[in-house]
Image 1: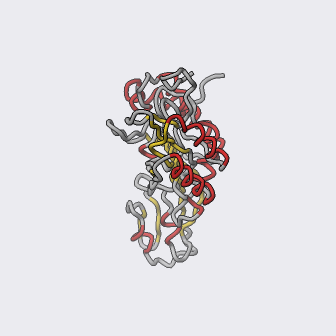
Image 2 (image 1 turned 90 degrees about the vertical axis):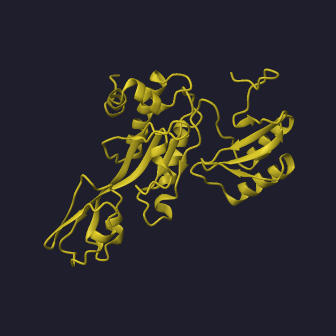
Length: 289
């Protein structure tokens, strides 16, 4: 059991020692950056009473309260819990799951990022790992939530199709496609699948509705990381149609990391050391029971 290093007491998750002796930071848990207005008011009250009255918004969409006396941290945590605010994770564990707003409010959003992030949070949050493990969910290939820079990144994707009966040959799709993946031959349009990012911009932008979504899902990126040694995640060559399938694939990726990762070695570093094919074989092909 982890202790606070002073009196052998169990360490409270999300309570992080500061460089200033006797003070700690409270790292608060959020799923996709979501807090209610009542929770924010409660957090502000705790920051005023136990900290210095300020809040820090983290890169992982959480909130930190700095400069809390260590001796008062448990009281502050209990007060936050009464408002439904729980603690984040630190150390060698799965961290807060981040997400963009997704289909709920964004015109480009393909999938319900809040639902996906919630399910991932319930399954993986705070599980122990060789080192920190980060999960991010982004609603489309615009990648606003930086899925490609997470140990596991989930990205909304669509397969578009052209309906010639609805097309008036206006050419808007040619102008809006960010990768020039739409091809025009006389009055016939097609998709260059080698260049299509599956962003669905053609289906949103077409004024006639000639571009439609024939398949909607997510793609998975594994092994991304920022920090001292940045690594772009590796894209799995599969579109995932259901949250159940997604959770299963993430579970396999996490299991591979737990078996192969060394202490303080990120997922991507383990992939580069062991070999990408080993990770892909385990994630894409289930191990025998």
